[in-house]
Length: 270
Image (cartoon, rainbow, N blue to C red; front, side):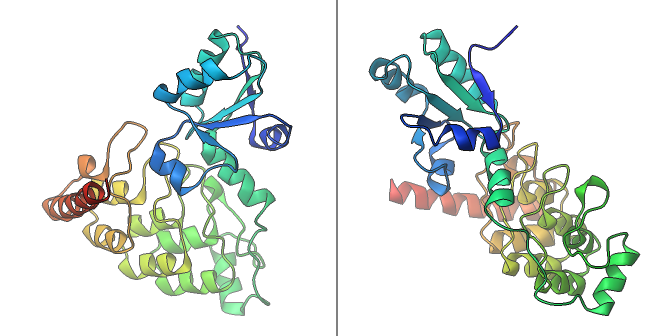
């Protein structure tokens, strides 16, 4: 059965939204929208939906996106039910859009000069090409992910200095920081944080490094992530926060204290 709207991949969407008159609608939560959104996007939620339906001509080109491409389909169907005839949504959501932008807008990081022999030797020993600090092996694992998984802070730093791409995600949607948390190595985590890694990256299940570290009882990693400003209020695809997943008492107290402080600040700002 065909859908009453069209689903667009990120590259097709990039062309579509350049057309005149397209209304771009972001149905993520206000905080995610405020942090980053597609240029020209407007917020869409259950309350604002009626306003769009009441004001827009039925042939208005609409482009709707959410986090991962699920909620956007619901809203697209709702618009179609109200006889809108030019409705589109984004396959894979804003996560797919960010990946598209990294590929199309931000060139892959390159080493500033020839790769040192010791680093080239390490790359080869780990199954990577000797001359590519951003190559991949199984599960889309990059060299910096491998070094992080090993808890090798010195090699992680060498790779960062050689141009390793800290925005890279493996086949599960995890970045190098997740692997450093697996190793529970504070020094490696610090190298990645100082290098600019995304502390709040959400993988294919919406889980963050803080959620993983809390659920696995990786206390040292939790401490480092909180110091780096990890968002304790983010929720997974199953609607759980890191505090909901916590596995030991130390992490429980840490997360409760930070969550309390964050909510207090939010109340002051409201």
